[in-house]
Length: 442
Ligand code: PXG
Image 1 (cartoon, rainbow, N blue to C red):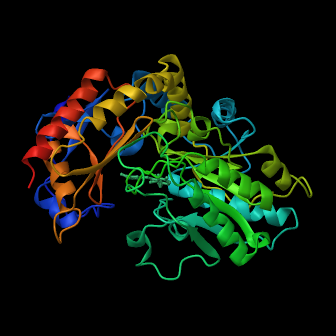
Image 2: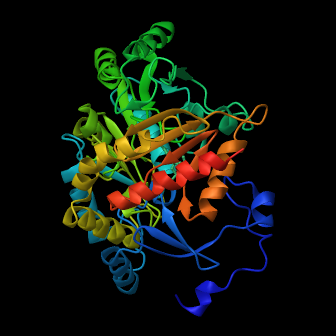
Image 3: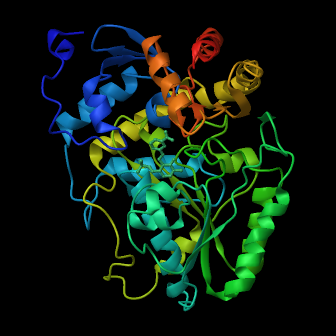
């Protein structure tokens, strides 16, 4: 590490940090200054094992040479090209490459810069698709309680996290929500899909009946809800949603921002569950988190519905200055190369049972009331402190950081999602550090 990276900033005031307790953080800052493979380096020179792939995005591990070099090369060769009415080869190359790993039929790709933008893009594609087909009466969007679809207005409207919604007025109209699938009483300590709860898919029938199915444009769900504490779907649930959508001409959107790019041991959760959506939202692992980029996949049926009218006219009035940005596209291509060369998706698949057994070995540890694992994702739910929800899990987060392990917490749930290059020894380290910490926590 060079001298420069060791210097900690001496003024923390100006940066208004996202989704952070700003005042508390600034009293006792936690800073990373470097990273390599499975570890971060802190500003005081300690190594921290990355149990969360950054924020669920660094699937290939940190500062991987292929990706670093691709970005350096691209920055020196073509830094930026206009995204509208102009092109550059790498955006086309990346889209074609992504289409080859996507579930069959999802062969068109729209680039964005984040998960949140991918969500907005997907919702707009869904509405505009029906209208392009002359079915503009389909204007309703259906989400789910405990859903997280980023932080923009469409996403918080279909999302189901009250804390992310309550401050922001009336949101989108014409939105309804299915019930969530979290039911630890019926599905305690689950591995993979949960046994009970397929019946919850019938909630879509109830909502469709209430509004009339002909008014519903799309249903959006995370195949595995991530941010609200890792909620795997009940067996058969996603298949049933697919059936109901097909029966009523409703589009099914999967938000795979967390589950995409190998996190489940398959390219996408759609492959893991054997259910193909009409539109698939991705970001994060697309560029290994290194450069902001998102990609929305659409079926040929959807794409082609837009390709009518005079050829000189813009078919879809949507896009971003940085859609398909050259450096992001180069990062995406190098990331795909790294996943493939190192067989990281297969590695995640082989590790799934090892991971599940290791995390579930925490059953019975102090404060633990439930554990869920699926793919290379794990959640350890803690009993909240009386009258002070989230406090115990946050204490675990701070203690883990001090002891050299990065975890995420949401409410009183610890969420884990290491880079797919994690070794069995490192999985053991994650579990033993947590076991030790939980025993000492108030
Ligand atoms: N959809 C899903 C399913 C997500 O998980 C987004 C959309 C939004 O992505 P952007 O790139 O706009 O942040 C997300 C993001 C956490 C955590 O710890 C989760 C996310 C982001 C940051 C933290 O649970 N998910």
